[in-house]
Length: 236
Image 1 (tube, rainbow, N blue to C red):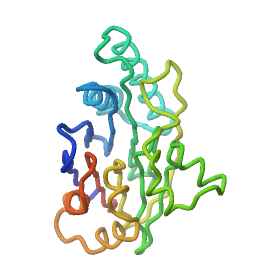
Image 2: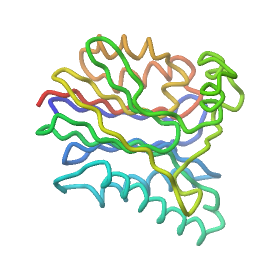
Image 3: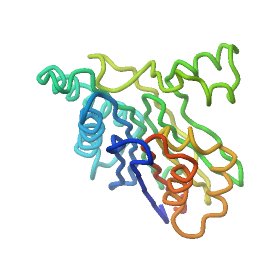
Image 4: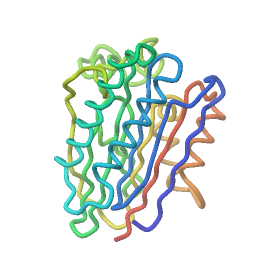
């Protein structure tokens, strides 16, 4: 990857940041949005990042299965920790992982929750992952529109998360990459405050740090949640 960026902000409403993000070799990118009472969300997202780093950092031959197993291991550790502490009971986190294999020109990903992976190619922004949320199910069933989903009072209700149940279903996939592609991983603190159209424009026009630019815009637009973005520009 030629350029990599990451940024996170508590926002204007929350008292602490339950989001977590990381970039580590070999070309691995992670975002996580924790949930739970008091500091439990921070614990869950931090455990997710630490576990994924332990499982993947420095390894060769990474693919969908390796990313999926890293999320499953994080799920096991978070569940065990929550069971051992009443203060952490009910904690969980989203997880969106990406590994870019420059030799194969491929981006392998794993995903649970409503954080997202996007691909920007030739000025067109495409959402790669599907939200595991109540409102996403309503959209898929044709009961509400995408715009209505953005304002729905239950838009933060997840149908799947890491650390909530002993077994977690992890979506995985692979996207073929081309020179000049831009990959964005983000929490819903960004996508709930900034439209896809605006995200696309900012990624296309960003001159310095696109992750910081996106996070700043979300905060400017109200910052009602923690907001995190990781951006990677593909140039093998």
